[in-house]
Length: 398
Image (cartoon, rainbow, N blue to C red; front, side, top):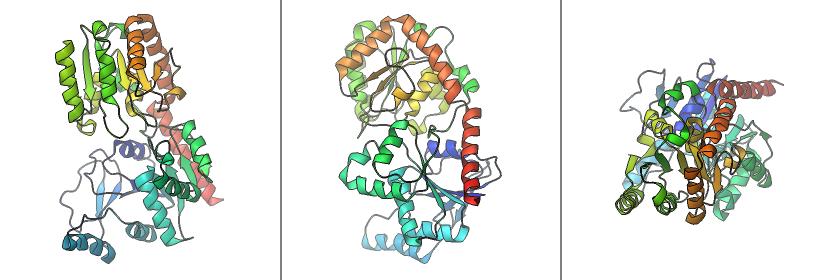
């Protein structure tokens, strides 16, 4: 069987998802939706490259770059330089041509606003002569963008055109149906793939969770992330945080500056794990979660945050915004707290409870570990994903 993925070649989600089927003997191709650095962890994948002579080929993992050129692409690439305009992202005509040449049995778009829209354009170009199409959404693809007028019509068109739909949550399945989904719904699975839970254990600090003296804060402050609200809430709990350290992952300059002021004002040390979450190693991330008593993730919109999953795997007590899908994984007040992302008073109250109640965080860690073992273990997830594709292929043969 031949699968053509359409997505972002620098995204760890794409790497981890395709790795789940890398040993099945299927032909795996990947069409990039934008010019970006190739993630080094891809396995057994042929990745289309727009350059005639790629500067660097990946080594190991049986990955190959396949250069391709079409007159239309060359025209699209050269004209912007002549006209001094930005170069375009990869075009629907190029994707359509790849589909005609390689004739995949299945096209699987990973993410909506780039991959889904591009795949839809390619399908419109090819008309009825189009392979089976699976569309998997990530993060805020529907929850946020489905509320924006300039995106709603595009999302509806994709949902009406795809044959299969995958999501990280029941919430987004419901929203997709409201927006016109006609295809078959795939099993709810984390877009981030799966985890080797046994290997993660070496990063856990020995002892009870309540004995840990670190707080983890997801450092995103952008169109959705609200790390600055988290810092404000932590400052309101400074009287209880003496002896603790705050670890911040993915802190942009605004967050790093605010964290420095927070540390100066409160005397609480702050460790910036990374100013770019994409560049930090998995070992460093799991080590940060493995020493954290509490893990805080705040945003006005999200799907199933990878940081939330890493928190429950490593035993950190999650405080997660109510705009993600944490309510499908934890019980509010028992195995974590679900909070509004822009209310520092409520967030501070949740932090205080998690700092003062040792039994709460220790018991939550035990329950969340069982949840992780049942729903995130790579052996189980891999079996579900392989079975999902096998069922799609079987239905094609009917």
